Amino acid sequence: MAITLLSETLINQIAAGEVIERPASAAKELIENALDAGATRIEIATAGGGKTLLRVVDNGCGMGADDLALAVRRHCTSKLGGGLFDIRTLGFRGEALPSIGSVARLTIASRPSGSDHGAEIAVHGGVVQAVRPTPANHGTVVEVRDLFFATPARLKFMKTERAEAAAISEVVRRMAIAFPGVRFLLSGPDRTTLEFPATGDDRLERIAQVLGRDFRDNAIEIDAERDEVRLTGFAGVPTFNRGNSLQQYVFVNGRPVQDKLIFSALRGAYAETIPQGRYPIAVLSIAIDPALVDVNVHPAKSDVRFRDPGLVRGLIVGAIRQALAAEGDRSSTLGARGLVNAFRPEGAGGMGLASGAGRGFPGPGGQSGYGNAAAAPWAAERSPYRPLETDRRGFGEAAQAAFTAFAPSARMASEPVEPETGGTESPSPSHPLGAARAQLHENYIVAQTDDGLVIVDQHAAHERLVYENLRKGLSTKALPAQALLIPDIVDLAEDDCDRLMVHAQELSRLGLTIERFGPGAVAVRETPAMLGEIDAAGLIRQLADELAEWDTASGLAGRLEALAATMACHGSVRSGRRLRPEEMNALLRQMEATPGSGQCNHGRPTYIEIKLADIERLFGRSG
Image (tube, rainbow, N blue to C red; front, side):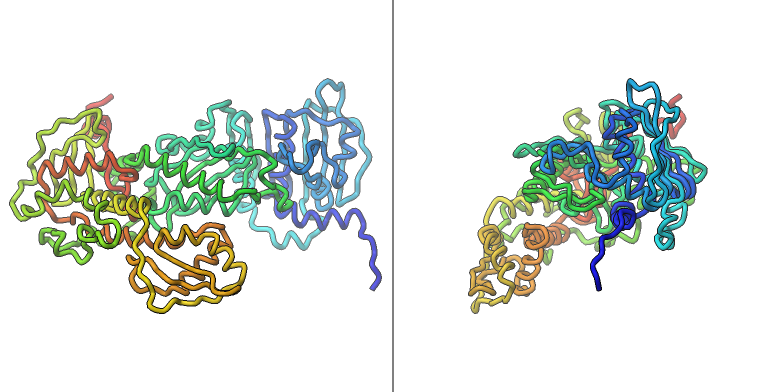
């Protein structure tokens, strides 16, 4: 079979298969062009989910007749003056407009600043028409009609008009968050109008426009820098979460990206603070030297590659954890709102606390048996998991601190204590969780603050305190290891062996000692003592896969932390135990000093705060 040169139209249609996957892809490319042109107002109109009509109007710098003629030709761009190692614009490949024109009816009208008239060019199914003069405002109007009419097979793979319209809305939301100084207006007969007024430098206000006002009340500001890589943005408190990852927005040098490394780091930052199946809400922006990141990975430009992925991952995890530690006792405002709604007449029938899953908390199916414990007084010596006696396992001293405040009264747990009995301590501005006033149902501590009250789940709160002390022990000392009588030889690919040996010292600190055993195997000589008898070969293969994928071996540390979480759960003060006033106040003070105390190890809230103003409104005492 003879080799032939493909026609320009066919080349563009092939390229369109990668660049323009659906109407939302075309919208993304056109909006990026408008932003690169310096637009401060962008209006998008759609019909038929973007398949019938997609129009983007901007007030950018515009183009003259000569530029229009080149703009619809493949590999023509004005954005690569610094080469591929210094990309500072959203677009740069010069493929979007010719790709759209090859599969749709494309019309571009533009008028540059300082020009008395505009110019227009049309491309229908790859056929380029001559440039002609036309009346136009300053800026550019790009109109795409009958998308994929020239490649009808592609239309069979399109989703419903509603789904395609929703995808375009999501593109606009991401762009709006990235560029708060730009006004965006999305309208059309197939949707309700969506408008995001410009907010200037107030990025949180723009995020609130997109994600809702609740995010402003539950967001923690992130601002960290390491080795000239800066991370800024906002992350929600752990108890402010949702059932999918659609409200996780990440930008690299202003470019919206869908990078698995970054999303993995985000999951790692919230580890042990969010229930399984729930996702944090976050908006993160990474500023990095363009020479240290490759955005030319895929024509869609949604994937990036960092020269030092470990640095970026470590920065994200460290910055978010540090921010959560600084405000770790902060609980979601939605919890208090749900509680207040439960007391209102309209709150009956589904608006009570049981429906908390819809407000960022797991529903009844996520319970793990709290409150079902036996009524017998809890005692450490009877617990099958005895954190107080685990010195030989490497962190008994760390766990001791969490139990100190409760040790004197452990012997008096059976003594009668009136539930109404409150402490003599007074609320103080330096004590955000206030002073204990009562214990209800032998599980819930009621504390008075300066401007409201706090209800604490004593078991969940103490579980978190114990776990944080255990985890601190894991991170501050080398863990004890148990030597294998016969080393376990694990056969692996040579590349996997090389990667494991690079991290051998790190693994040794966690109690896993490995040595090279020929070119394609490693010998496991010691395993972490606290894990007991394990499948060493399975663990090694899991770590090898993790290193190949993420260049980090966090799986072993995760297993150790999971065991610490189990020990903390079984070794904490149980539901059903009556506490003395000094014990309740001691628990509150420790919560205030412990990072992440706003949620237990399973991600559920440890307390709910109700403001006095909300209580007064319930009784009609406020205007």
